[in-house]
Length: 328
Image 1 (cartoon, helix red, strand yellow):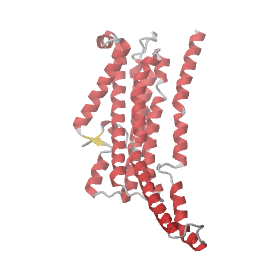
Image 2 (tube, one colour):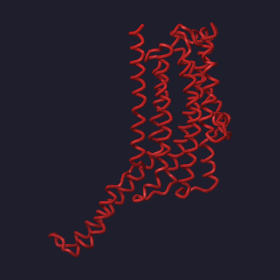
Image 3 (cartoon, rainbow, N blue to C red):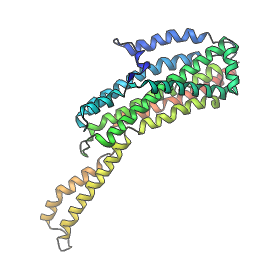
Image 4 (cartoon, rainbow, N blue to C red):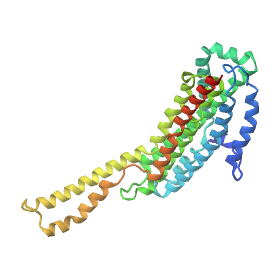
């Protein structure tokens, strides 16, 4: 197992992630500007390529660190041997050489497929890459973005799978103490917010290079589908276990209540019987009101707020493009 190469790019200093993003931006902007032309149909989307790489690498490091913190916080609740826990923890930021190679190859193939879709054929992609400097830089940029995004998304999905397995088989669950399960929700929401931020940058492609929605859509879909997986997967097994536990406890309580009531003569229960049943009725009311999702109000509010950002940026980009067309 080796630490993912993207995480090795993050500077190990105070504010290292912020500095890493800034350094990447300084390096990438001049490089991708080499592919800039006055022809909007063939120019390189300089801002998009630079910003999404400079954003996703530091944010991937941040999300991974948050996932590691969440697993350490869950450690007292996990019925795992130390060795098994260490192996699961290591997989949050590491992978075998074969997996890393597969991520890079898959990213490159997805990038070539997308570019072939835009340029009409694989031959058109190759010809465009070799024709001139803008074509070459644009091809390098697209492949780099696809490789980086594929690596990040596959690792975030791997993290989601790890937490899903912990929630399904290893974590101790108590119906009236679900706040200890909040780390599952934080992993779910943190990974989702990272990808939502990336989605918000996609309209830059249309503004810079004149691509239409159909040409941008494959990349957006390839990002959106894993987003849904990363959001639901870490919390779904916990949700199902809480639902089953609540149903089991409700069935047990109702059986005890019915048994006590059946012992009477069928008329209105006496006050002594009601006093005897009061704790059971109170407990039933408590567990009926327990949420079976490991979220709190703050997490949900933050997620809903960030989900509004991509549609706003896409709408804003469309307005800007129409305004520019009208002015020109």
